Structure formats: structure tokens, C-alpha cells
Image (cartoon, rainbow, N blue to C red; front, side, top):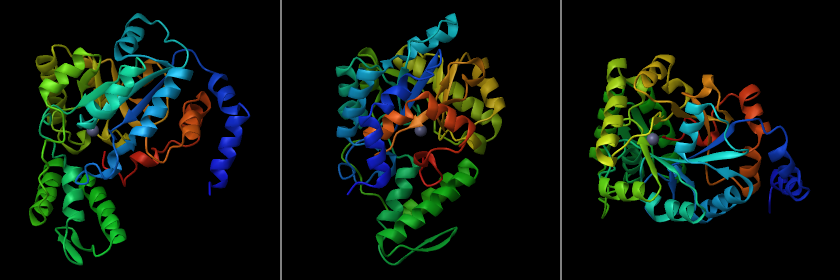
Length: 349
Ligand SMILES: [Zn+2]
């Protein structure tokens, strides 16, 4: 049975309220940036952390249909052009972004986006194409494949006998990993993964450079997301700069061009800074996205720390539409400055 909240939002939608909100106060130059990671069924690739799934293929198709019907999908070029020429974006402009370069991008995301003439941005950490093996998937595998009642880690011993206990252990361990200097964090994950080896998948979890070039030729913007996907404020500043520089150079070399775009790994507020923004600017980057929840006008002060709307499978079609209104942007900016649940401490990226 649907919850009271679901029933209420459906009713408001039927009464045309959502459509009204979409148009009310639609400020000039407002941009909605949708943030996806994986679009897949949880049991399709069970060795990968399912909390990175942003939508099922069916939900994603419905969301793209809504974008095409009620919004103006724009490309990364459109956004950069608007910034550089100071020309406003069309009303209800929306940019679709996808992080990390998982294989499902080519299976489920791009074909649907293409059908609706939508040109997504794929933010790729340049050390990972054709390889995969992100730390959060390795940590997930280590905890979920653990045999027995207990998992001992350098942080302590966890009960992992039941599904609920494994989930609880995973949340604690992820949060701990994010608090460590990055090199130490990777040693910590490595030590756990060694104790409980992963099943080796048949094919790499991420797209390789040939596949990325082919997607770029057909309308995907492949853009920088660091090289090795560290949390940029958990490594020395010079290393963070090198991560940014290497990712821009590698995209340029492998794809042929790199638009002046960037996505911070796990872009919650504690993982980027004013000095990183200044460095990005010095490298020519003109638009950088975070995982701070919300949307904004394409205004100077927001360009290098732009919020996104975090997609997750619990978002109903009506809530999705409600999030894509200026009222929600105002609410997130002024009332609730916290990150979305999908990007909270309990999720890896
Ligand atoms: Zn990422």
C-alpha cells in the first residue's frame, strides 16, 4: 500500500501542482544537473556495491522521457558556451551526468539518452577504464563474501552473520575509510579484500578507452573525474593538483579533447575546497560539479562548486519532478543544506 507521502504527492501531481511548480519562479539561467552512477538491476552484477545504483533501467527510461517532455536537455558544450558568452540557458535546462564509467553506461544509459536526443556527460577517473576495482566495490565484496560470524579488521571486529549485520558493518567501514588519508584507506581496504577475495568478474566493470572513444564520437562528453579517484581533501594539496592535471591530460590524449569540466570524487562539501577550485580555474576548468544536493542558476559564484540532484532508486516519478523545481533548489539552499540521502555517509561515492 502506498505511504501517505506517496499518496499526497501523487494527488498534488494529478491536480497539476507539480507542473505549476516547474514553471513558477523558473529563474533565468537555472540549471538542473542530474547525478547518476550506475543504472542496473541489483542482481545483474551482484559483486558490485548496489548502493551505487542510481536507477533501474525502467526508472531511468521514465526519467529521460520526463526530461524530454517537460525540460530542455542541454549538453556540456551548451553549458560551457553559456558561461563563456554570458548568454542565458534555455528555460528548464537540464544536464545529465554519470560518474565513474561503469559498463552499464553503454548498455542502459546511453541508448535511452540517445533516443531522446540527450547528450550525457560521463565523468571518468582516468586510471580505471577497462579495469574497474573501485575501493567501494572491493570493500563491499570483502564484507558480503565474508564467511562466518565475525569479520576482523584493523578497526575492530564486526558481527557479519546476518544480512543486517553485514550492512551495518559496511556502513561503519565505509565511513571509516573516508576519514583516513587516502593511501592509508587503500591499504585498509586491501587488507580486508585479501582476507575475503572477490569473485573475479568475466569482464572489467568499467568501459575501456576504445569504448569511451566510440561513445564520445556518438555524443557522450567524456570528462575528468581525477586520475585515481581519491578524496581530494584526504591527500596533500600538491597530489590533489596532480590528480586533476593528469585526468585532464589523459582525457585530452585518449579522447582528443577535454571540455573544461570536472567532477569532484564524492563531492560532498568536506571533499572539495576554495584552493582546489582556484587550482581548477588555473587549469582552465570553467564548470565543476559536486554531490551537494540541489540545483542553481549558472552564476559565477556557483560555477566551480555546482550542486547536483542525486538520483537513487527510491525516487518516484513524482518526487523526481518535485526535485526539478526552483522551489526545491531554494529549499536545499536555504533550509536544508545537507547532502541528499543518496550521497550521505552510508554511500560510497
Ligand atoms: Zn566517482
